[in-house]
Image (cartoon, rainbow, N blue to C red; front, side, top):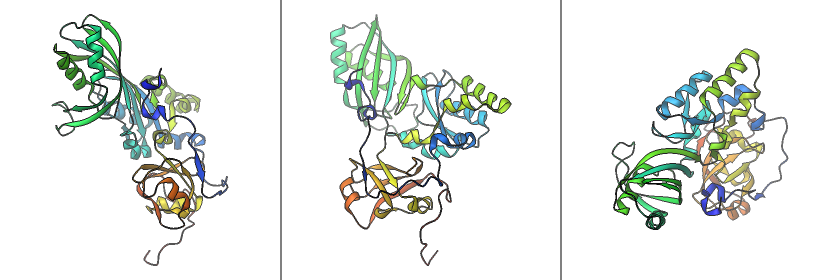
Length: 338
């Protein structure tokens, strides 16, 4: 795989620099490293990378996962049509509050485009180049969004194999790209017409086909836990919900600031322990504890440099709280109005 055939989150892989604003030591007596949560807490704050089969809707698959664990709720991260298979991350319990954290993550698909007439390889590759980069799309008639012209980015589009009028392609694209529409538009650009014959999602942000879990595997692991108390299989299949913010810039909070954020407070710069490099004003960021637990999502009001140097002010506007209050002790002063 070349660098050109990587999603943005994969191009940026590798250790990010975390700049130390306050070298507060980790308090081992509070909080929990996500991977060390109890199995019941992991189920309530986890995500499963399901290998969606053909025919059921994404909503049905999420409901089956919910029912396996007896949860009140579970939600999928990015809809797949009933006939499409592959990577379908399903958030469990409290983690459903994070499903939109993957909306900006790239997706990868492998599919078969059926052209209505055969075309030469040279001509096909020329059109493929034309459809790489920024493209315009109208959502299909049967879609959940308003039908208006939208701009989407195709990160890479590769022809893998040609068999007569069937073209096997790999597409890396921005979330919200309609591959069926892409197939039709490519057929029109070739002057022969075309449609999508088959499609499988192979990546959704940090979730990949190689880590997919079949529903039966999940059910079997749950039965083994219920009947024998064996949680080893479940721990291999359920990931901490922190996996869902892999692609977001990180802000590490001081322990003393965590409970205030859990009550909905914005993040003052003096409540920050560490700052990831490259943060810009307006960036969506993940707010984490020193142990790696996700506390909330927020929006940066300062870039990295200012977050490191400022001695007062609100550095992050909290947009969604994910951790329960009282997980960390209250170490903040309430106003007289409270």
